Length: 486
Image 1: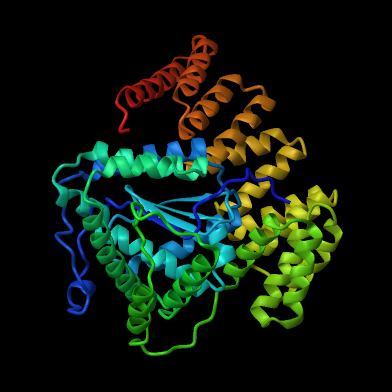
Image 2: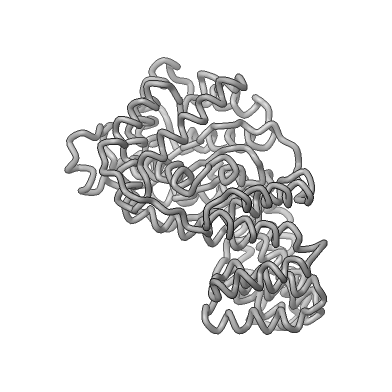
């Protein structure tokens, strides 16, 4: 089962500190029933400042909080966000996505169009419709620039104030204590009653715009009040009260009622979940289960009573739970699933991993390369290939595959870490240091990143092209280090 650092993570807190530069789309302007709070074009923070704030915040988050890495789930989440985004009023759609390794329910959006979810959101959302409702709500916060507009109304804040708030959120998520919340309260320095009132207006607007996004993108708008109601009831039963000074997403009976009334105005449709949601959910359930046996028992219970989508996803869950300890069982299950759906990448990638664990690495590599021919540059396929190449001592092949991956996903620190390992095994020491530098940079260890580039320079000897590129990157790191946004 997956190793986790225990944290008393803030349950049911949707952090939405939004500064994305945008204006409302016509679909919202033309709807007189939707509230509009202030002017969506703000001069408080420029687009470039927003992007730099978001990138710095993401580096800080990755340096302090464990991330959940699963390429199949990452690919699904990316596709879901981009299926919702065209129907939202977010104009800057160059999203960066991050998954936090925590079983608690949480989602957030921050400057620079960064959207994150805890792995636990998959566990707590009963359906893809409910999961999408949370993301559509966060997209609405992004599109309406709610936090930027709140800061602008105060007329006393600067980008540094916003940066302090972002830092406080990292503290809260990392330490699992009230330290970050106290820092947040001190940073805001505004009347608590005014803040609470404004936040409630923001939440109402985000709910209503999120419902529009859900409906127009083909998801069930009624899933939002259903999700909220269950969160509210569970929070009251467990006594998980959110401090009044952290009221970015206040949840109340009146808000749930308003959301339900809004959702029922839309015509009822038949909604079917994408099986990839349940595949993702079942991998996370397996990873967070107490034991392999617990996960297997759970999936068997779903198979006995579930519908077709749930049964196939539960069968996949069985295969995933058995992957390392009983790979032959996984192969048998996945053989049947692939016979029904030959081109489903999540099945093929997991099947190849099962082959590899069953000491059939050559067949696993052949399977993945065949799939790659049909799906060029596919992230899960390339990542699985790189992993199997490396573990099969095919170092050059792994190195080449990882180079392709970092060109496509250059902001992914895990890939740079693995590329550094491949470079080291291949004896490419200069490239080893350069890849390590990128890893340290993306995880907010700037001194270590610069140190790695210095080592790369020392070992480049008289290779002028390498020296020029390394020196340029080092200059960039020094500039960022000496000009911090927070």
